[in-house]
Length: 421
Image (cartoon, rainbow, N blue to C red; front, side, top):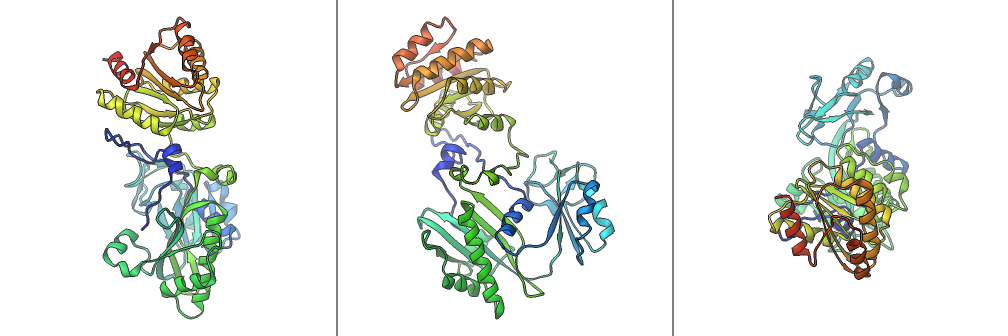
């Protein structure tokens, strides 16, 4: 399957390892729970299972008009393997099926307010706050469908396989003939002929060909409407009553489209996100926690990665990645320092700023103000270069504060490492 990549994520979400010292920076994407993704599908007319969301016994009324033959009860967390997981209260399984309506609420109560532990969660699990109760459907056949933005094709690509419900990477490796890839013209959109071609490749027969083609078209329209970079449906199922249903959906979005998709980004779930990262985003700062003890304040993702590499090469270990961006103001510098020092592991701070768009004097004033306001107690090493650098150095020099200046990045990293040895 085509790999998803975006330069914006390198700059904003840091979805790339640094090159020199082998530092791996975790990626962070917009995370939606299963029911949230299904709501987006439903709003675009895509056929899905009917469902309700409960947070406990108090929501029992939402089931009054939900009469189905069989109920699927699924804990909503950002992790796979829920069905085989277990709760911290001893209850087994984050997914249950029952035909007995009276059992639904007791099952929900055993999940909500307890931590579900699976192979993909932290050791002590993730707290379940919501449970999805869905209509169980009888699946006759499972297929795979995804739409992704692909660099090689310079636009969206539709990937399909009649071997659904499986690891698509394994299918591509073992039986590549079961994978069809169709580039879509981003300006013209998916054509009726393309949708029908894919439906037939997925081995839908008779009237189901038209139904599947309609679902494929609706999914593509959703893809463009919400600025997605990936919509993955696995399985796109054929049911025993002749329906074509998107049973499970995974959606990823273009971070650069946040200004257009505010409602979607407001849905983001922060189950496993560092609170410092959330706080930083409120001030247009990009923060990723790491495991070292040297806090890094930089401007630009590339400079940040280079800074961390040089720290490693000098025998130190970065505590974070904090990018203040190109339009930073003094108050953002203060917030950046507050976030850095809120990590008890930070024993020194290295500021490495190259002033292009950024005015070094603005950074210098922000550093002085932050140091005085916070009564900073850890060693502070500053390397500034670029726009208005002479004025910036004068501001630091005349501040009377204990700020160790460096002329280049290697010297700055060396001083930062030595300051805590």
